[in-house]
Length: 585
Image: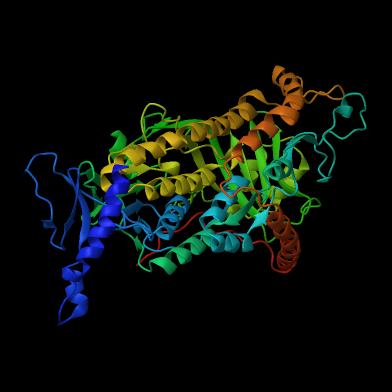
């Protein structure tokens, strides 16, 4: 009740004294600025200060309890805007900026790249993230949907990397193949993505090109604050100034800017997290299994993109081909394109392909003469022709690689330090198997913004950031665990499933994989996706989802056929580097 009474008193005081601050003559704009009052808390009292910070109207005894805290306002609440600095202009940082700008916060994003450029691959948005985008802003959601490619409306699941017959045929995943050798065993398990989205009445999972998403977010932010982002001058470190006193943010050029809150959204090799947890940025152990507090997952991944019309192109969203010690993923990413990922259990630093991932410029190939497609094919010897067909259609110069690192959940350390907080990959990077990395960053952005919007004075900011951590840690930890478990199971516990009709799967892992099938299909996967989609602040959106899917089908077919025709005439072209490139200025 204290803050309610303080706020009411503040309104009354401002109204009763407004005339005292109006200039009688001269430059109205300058005078109004010079005498603009600011509501503050001094100890337990409400006071006003002028533009010079001098407190008026309250007698204080000079004790240490008389620390000044500002009232934080919203469009419908008295007080000044909360000032937020965001480190990093990726998906999480830009979504946070938009969410906070729409609430009336004073937001500035500090991004390391000198300029944004149209480079990058697709990013998956599951149903939970789409619900958050809709809740943040209707226009944002509509613009994302215009660029969206649905995968969750079509068949998605796990295929047998050795037994799939190479024709991309659509078959069932029945157990009848056990007694009937004529029953196809191409599909091992199918994912209930559509069914779980329908459970909550949500839009279906899909992908959007990262450059398209970034352009949309930047444009929506600029509508509110045209100069919200500063490029080429990233956050290097920070110093907390104490409870309610904000934070000094040091930028790469040595500039110090002050803010009420610093949000670290600067990726897995975060400078903000390095300061918070006492890490050294990108410092690696000698065996490369540890890097800035992150652990090597045990897997490296190659990725490529091609335009190809497979027989199942319009019927499948994404497929995971499983086999001994590796798996191969393909996904429709729109405009006739198939993006693929090849995961291998290799030591860290097994560098073959260039990398343009994670906001870096595409670097050089280890051996410029090596055909990377042929190398990856050699690691899939004996696998289905479906994998080989996709690889053969891929320009070798488009192949990229990165070692996969993640972090254990921070159950014993908060994501917040005073007036500073980390979100997204900066504090909970996760394996890409569930496509939830970006989704969880978007959830972070929404929850953090809602929490800070309810904060009425700078004295409560530190408590609000700890409250945000407590709200998010359990859910994020579960998603991190599920993402890592998916990789570990496929690589370490899965193999070609046992079948009585051939000798392709005879190891103990093959028998284990076979017995996993009904449990995965009828219990684990439905529970997993139902949990992932359970965060949906919009509530049900049934009619919107149906209309969007119907409209998308027409556009998807049109753009895909145009791409297939173009490639038939002109041939394949290599895709650009992932994410965004560091432009020269």
